[in-house]
Amino acid sequence: MSESMAIRGGSPLSGAITVQGAKNAALPVMASALLLRGRRLTLERVPNLRDIHTMSDLLRHLGAEINFENGRMTIDVPEELKWETPAELVRKMRASSLVLGPLIARCGEAVLPLPGGCAIGSRPIDFHLKGLARMGAAIDLEQGSVHAVTSGLSATRVTFDFPSVGATENLLMTAALTPGESVIENAAREPEISNLAQTLRAMGAYVEGDGTGTITVRGTRELESATVRIIPDRIEASTYLLAGLMTRGDITVNGINPEYLAALLSKLREAGVDFITTPNSVALDAAGKNWNGVTLTTSPYPGFPTDVQPQITAALCMAEGTSVIHESVFDSRYVHVPELRRMGGKIDTLGNTLIVIGVPKLSAGEVRASDLRAGAALILMGLAAEGRTVVRELKHVWRGYENLMEKMASLGARVELLPVEDGDE
Ligand code: UD1
Image 1 (tube, rainbow, N blue to C red):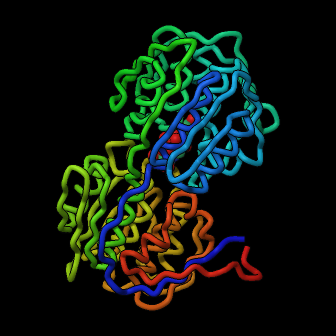
Image 2: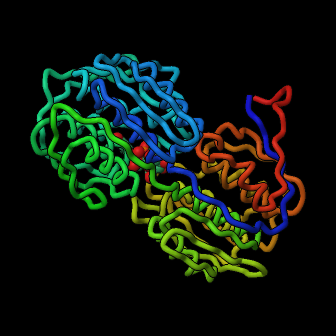
């Protein structure tokens, strides 16, 4: 059962929004609270999202006490924690795997059913497990669950085959509570990793090199209470900028460091889109303008983010000329393509590459969100297409966009939430 959104599209969006705290920074930072013993982690600018509630439920199940109001969250962690995680929570969200490292480091044991999350290709956690095994955890896979146990972890050097965001975060947290010097090589460089590193530093661990491919951690047996502010959400910011573009509107996104958006902004510049940046905002003016097709490949930060691939694919459906989009992070992140086609997008697939032939107009229609960013892309299509579009299965979208209806309405979007109907799944 999930709500739907009706959109009367075809008119320009105009105005300003302030970006929410980053979902993908808040989730690992919340998990890092488990490293504490009888201490408190206080977080500011936490977005009010479904995934955040799932992580809260998981931490509560393990024994933490959580208060969350107006973006401020306190997580009080008791001396004793549970270390078995329940399948019904873990399967809701892949980021549940982020509690694995902290639990092993803190309790010496952890059980994690294999996690769920967006349906975007095969998403194993083998890098996480290999890294934890190198630090001294014995890992067993039993009946769809990971069982990890250790009689003591040791600081070490871990080199990832691929700069996985989640694996880097899990190892970073584990190393922070493991005395000695650990080095993570081929680490992910995302800004969200730096937000986690900042949290661990505030707790008293030594972390250096975040934002580069080599992170050095000197861990300690006991970490302290800390207060941290979650960084702005670059994926939300990108989505609103693309909404401004696709509706030929003018939108200012406030509270974002444009450096986080460098890969997107560089492609927009190449496409001939006008925008102005300040140290904490981006203003895009697309009124009465057209844009050109571009070629892009998604890759780990600072490359083009895979989490913006569905939304830019939507925007390039209306470009002048042809675009080529290559997805290199996930092996099948094209579940949105059939739905974009239903709304007039001319898209051919060639293995892991999309060929998008720009059309002057999209058509309104009834479509279904299959995952979080696919849902965002369909909403953008609906805003751009004249007529009434209905996007179903909004539950995926609630995982990542705070106050979506209010924010869009404030930009002049004509959107309406439809109640769950009989026959809806
Ligand atoms: C994080 C983000 C997600 C984003 C992704 C890539 C969070 C909560 N989620 O997900 O929104 O799309 O980064 O920017 O921050 N892989 C393996 N084995 C592993 C781990 C990863 O093969 O052990 C593969 C994955 O299948 C995928 C690629 O590596 O193909 C990237 O995954 P990863 O960077 O780990 O993404 P997540 O941390 O899951």
